[in-house]
Length: 346
Ligand code: ADP
Image (tube, rainbow, N blue to C red; front, side, top):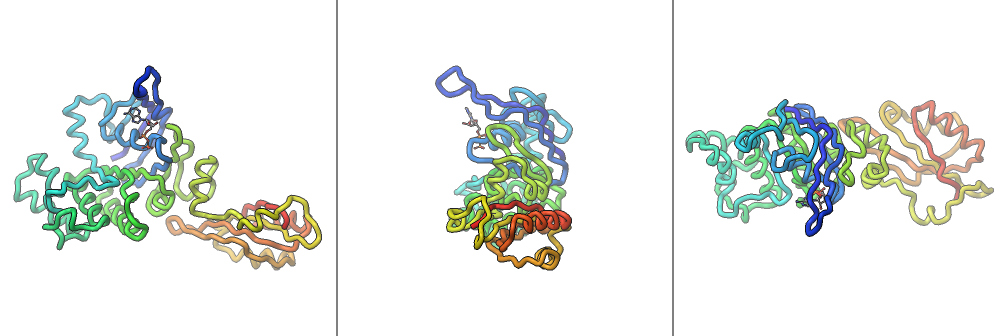
């Protein structure tokens, strides 16, 4: 089930005044069927509003929200309620009922939908098994860890056999290791049920781990979107670069940054950033450059990462190089598919 937002705008009346708050503006977003699409943004960027528009809790002020070919804003209230049944949701704070067991929580949406008890049992037990909680069916939320609670949340979201799963900061309250296991589970259910997943997060590591595509949202606008690998390796927007740099961490160490100047001088080392991705990343480029240029390099910072099995990274190197040698370095590097930036001399 695909989701499409076309020219979507959402304004709220500001509290206690006549002003309007533009929560979302000019939103065009395609979430193809079976894809995992991540939306990343800071607090107040408009992420929750986006989710509420997709599940029909809010109507857009302008534009269209189309879920599975149906324009949500054109539906009656009853139709929206039916529609919502084909959308599963998971939350940052799990939203489990404390007085129901894991089983009872997963069964709840089925009870509401009027599914007979025998049928409910046939559905709930395999779901608890799927999320790795077959032995915790009778436990109450207070007896479960954060990760286990989110597993119950995922089983509950899947109970009505939705075609779309909306994840609202579902791993934000979890430690990194638990986050990883929950994201792996999301990938698993995405593949197993060809589930379309929209996940909202403020963490680039979450996007990197699971999203096929990413949209960066700021001040109610999508400032950049595309395949995750492309956005990571070629961010064009300043906000995106900031999110990406949280992971790539390639700023110069402070003690060098404080000494760096733009003019070369005898006895100073040149500092250069090499960025590599795709084919270029797979070659032994540093030794090729050393051979071709007769230059020796020191490694100041290095970070290599992988998205969907494809490597990318940045390297800050130092070399005893004249400006002419640096020109030659930049030319050679570009023939190897690397991008370079001369940071200066220190
Ligand atoms: P995020 O989920 O990224 O933190 P939100 O979608 O919650 O962002 O909010 C986007 C903007 O819309 C914010 O400026 C917020 O204050 C405003 N907003 C959200 N909901 C309402 C509301 N019900 N009434 C007024 N303003 C709202």
